[in-house]
Length: 311
Image (cartoon, rainbow, N blue to C red):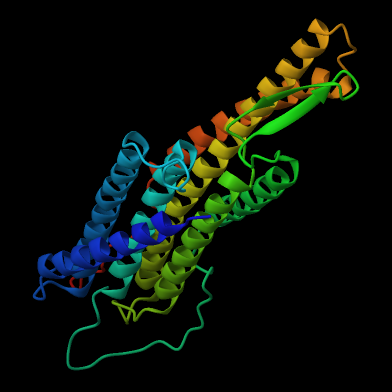
């Protein structure tokens, strides 16, 4: 399995994220207050993450359109198409990771530090955590089932009918040929997300005398990280479920038709699998729509307005 496109993608994302971080540091003015610098930085990294994520997805789309050797991973249209959500998710999360590493530091002659324990997942939205975890588990299960049920070509599925006398095959199906690159991509996305959440939880506080404001900044950052990563993972897994469901349906219909032409009994599997495949395809479409919707959810944990001294 050639996973070099994934590592090239990570390299490109790293370079782009570093460049974005340098630009963000130029635009965040040192003379502004700590709250103002933090707000400007948050808006800049959020916008830069979306832009670079979309550019990465666009670059992955070029791989789908350009011809390439079919014996390489990037040459398979299905694997190249999987790069779209992965490219957006890794690029988006990578830029946020670099942005969190360059978060404005406390300024002034006298600095304070609050001795508070913060878990990596303490400030993360519960619903996004559950959605992300469910997506990861579902993806692993789908890839494992595909590896077991895929045929010898590793990218299609074969259904038998007529007491095993006739068969029908269809692709693309999440066999090892597609499942292993997807698993590597999900692992990269999970690693970058975990690193970004760790940085969010452990970075120095910008506002050292207002715990509520500091928590609000961290909640917003954790939401941004999980929003992009969960959306990308959900779109990828939903796509695997949808195309695999269609492959199961088409293979079962072909097997049933071949059995009828040979005047053989269709069998229970070829009768039920078209309905199962159709249901999986429908659930995949719903999951993909939900993944796209997560991207547009506004950041939770509203940043608290600083309290003025004359109040």
